Image (cartoon, rainbow, N blue to C red; front, top):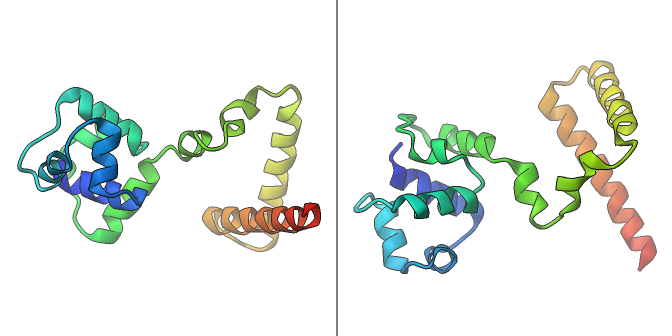
Length: 148
């Protein structure tokens, strides 16, 4: 996949327009368009800013990965994103909770519960994570309604 294709896919996955990316990087929309169509390549500093904007490694962005197929490309991009870092911008607690005193005990309890859940329901990692995440989200929604 070319650099331009990666930039286009990453921008679309991030839900940003070319104009929004241009504003964030201090370039024109036409410049972003030229990067995405492989007419030009970003300067090193702009490539670094793009990797930070899209929460992917600089190496991923500039490496000459020759993978084809939309689904595979999207999965590679999603797997490359550091979601904790990405969400920490909106929810700073995600970056700081590992430093909370005593948190290790809860990490251990949750990890044990996760393993038991997977085993009891014969689930793979992803399905177990998605279901447990959804259960917690539903609990959050109920608690949020009660506070209104």
